[in-house]
Figure 1 (cartoon, each protein chain N blue to C red):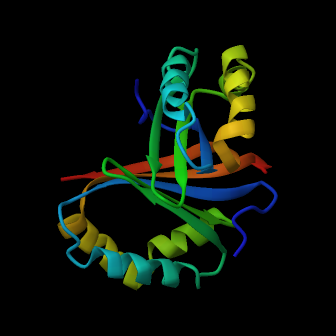
Figure 2 (figure 1 turned 90 degrees about the vertical axis):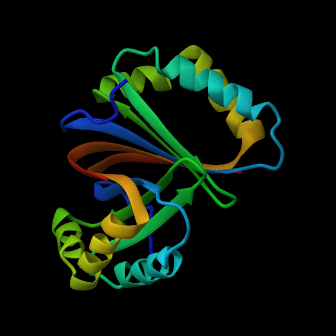
Length: 105
Length: 105
């Protein structure tokens, strides 16, 4: 898994606000991350959640790989459950990563 | 502030790991967000930090606006302090938002 290849590549920014309680979310989130990581073109994923907002960014080699993952059967079931149970709202942005740079101590 | 205009627009994904302790970080982060929001072409910002990782995504109308903010004098001083004091590492990705969709209960 390499979240830091040379651009260009693609990023999906998923921001969300959760409903109260776990309701099986943690287990499913873990499962989906595992399943995503097995998809062709998956480069990696980074997540952070605080009390206000969750941000998950997944990285992909192409728009086609993103589309395939979006339409994956198990993922579609999780999306439906997400709308019914886990999320108050979410927003998805599909982006082309054009430049990248880093700092490390 | 409108973080959800019609694509295309630009996103800067900033992922970071902090050093221990606040060291004046919170105050400066607040100040930088205020200053960024006054820049031409700024559309909005979303942040989340947990124990492992912080993700901040800021949204802009163009690459030029991103470049101007990167080179803003007060921001450059904060960047230097960030490297010296606040961050163990960070990674910046400049992206073009090509598609967006949402769910709301």
